[in-house]
Amino acid sequence: MKQKEKALFFPLEEYQKLAEEVFPHLKKLVLYGLGEPLMHPNFLMFLEIAKIHLPSSASITFTTNGSLLDSEKINHILENKLADEIIFSCETVNENIPNQVGHSLEEEQVQNNLDYCLSHKYRSNIRIGIETVIMDSNYLQLGEIIQKFVAKKVDFIALSHLYPFNESFENETVFSMITTEAITILDEVGSDWESIVLGVSREKFAEKLQDSYKAYYQFKDKLKPKERPVSEKYQEYVKRAKAKNVLLNISLYQKEFNKRNKLNDLQKIFDKCKIIAKKEGVDLILPSILPVYEERSCPYNDQNGSVIRSDGEVVPCFKYLWNHDSYLNSHSRFSSFYSYGNISETSFLDIWQSQKYSSFREKKSKMNENFPYCGNCSFSSNNCFYATEDTSDCWGNEPFCSECPYSVNLTKCLF
Ligand SMILES: C[S@@+](CC[C@H](N)C(=O)[O-])C[C@H]1O[C@@H](n2cnc3c(N)ncnc32)[C@H](O)[C@@H]1O
Ligand code: SF4
Ligand code: SF4
Image 1: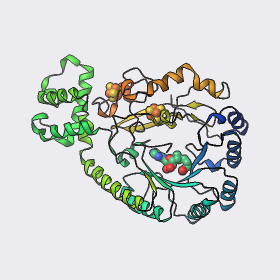
Image 2: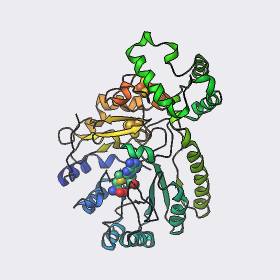
Image 3: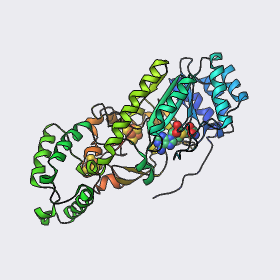
Image 4: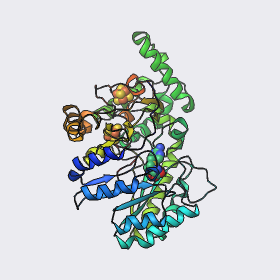
C-alpha cells in the first residue's frame, strides 16, 4: 500500500550509537539522502563524530546543492579535515533552459561557495567534484557544463542518467535499457520489417503488440495467427537471438526507434567531453548509454555498501528508501520501501549479517546468474505482472532488482 514517509532528521543519539558501533569498520561514509544534507541542524557535528570514529584511512563524502554552505562552514570543514570529498550538483549552466531536477550553480551565493571551496581546498587536501544528471533538456549543454567546471579546476565531474520516478522523467531519459547485442539483431529484424509485422506501422506496432499480449494472457490457446502482430518469420530471429543467449524486446525497440539519433549524439558529446577533461587532468566519470549487461552488478554490492534511513531502517540501496513509482521499459511500476531491519531495535551489524540480507548480497554477487534482465524481455513493456506489480521477479527474487538501471551502469551513485 502506498503511504507517505515522514520527513525526519536522523536523531543525534542514534547517529552517535551507530558511529561507535559501525564506523570503526568502514572504508567510506556517504552522508546524504534524498534531501539536502546541510538542512540537518547537526550536520557539522555529524562530520565531527564521524571523524572521531572512522579509521584514519576511511573517507567522508557528501553531495550538496551548495545553497546552505558558507565560508564559515567551509572553513570549519577544511580546518578540521571533516570531509575528503564534497560534490556539488549541477544540471545546467544556463538559467533559461528548463531543467527537471533543478540544480543550477548559477546563483551567486552557490557559485561563491563552490569557488571558495576550490580556492581553499589545498588546506585539507579535499577533493571537490560536480555531479550532473543527464536529461533530454540538458544533454546538448553537457560540453558547456564540462568546460565550465574544467576551467574552474574541479577534481572530478561525475555524470549519471536520470532515474525516472515519474512519467515525464521517462521522456527525459537519454539511454536505453536494451542491450547492444539485442539491438544488433533487432536492427536486422527492422530491415526485414515488412515481412515481420503483419500490416502494422512502426508507430502503431507497440500498441498492437500490447493488445495481442493482453489477448495472449487471457486466451492463450485461442490467439489466431492473424491476431499476432509479428509473422512466423520473426520467430527465426528470436531463435537466433536465443542461441546467443539474448532475448528480444521488440516493443521497446520500436518505441525507442526515434531515440536512436539522440543516443548517437550523446556518444559524440561524451567523446568531446572526454577530450576536454583529459586535457586539464580532470577525472570524468561517465555512465553507459546502453546497458553494460555482461558485467551487470549492484554498485552497493561492489562497495559492500548499505543505506540507513533517517528513522533507522536499513535498506539495500536508495531505490528502496521509500515507496515510489518508476517508469522504465515503457511501463510504470510501483516500488516499495524494503528494509532488512531497524537500528533502533537491532544492531546494524546483526542486520548486516542476518541470513536474509547476507543471502541477498550473495545472490547479487552474480547478477547474471541469479536475476533475469527485464530490459531485453518482451514482456516488460507488455504488462508483465512481475514488472508492474510490487512482488518478486519472475525467478522469485525479492526485492526486485531485475530492472535496475544502476546495475547496468546507466544511472550511477556512490561514485
Ligand atoms: C538526491 S540528491 C541529494 C543531495 C543534495 N540535496 C543535492 O541536491 O545534491 C543526490 C544527487 O542525486 C541527483 N538526483 C536527483 N534526482 C535524481 C534522479 N531522478 N535520477 C538521478 N539522479 C538524481 C542529484 O542531482 C544529486 O546530484
Ligand atoms: S535495485 Fe539495483 S542498486 Fe538497488 S540493490 Fe538492486 S541491484 Fe543494487
Ligand atoms: S520480470 Fe521476468 S518476465 Fe517480467 S519483464 Fe522481467 S524478465 Fe521479463
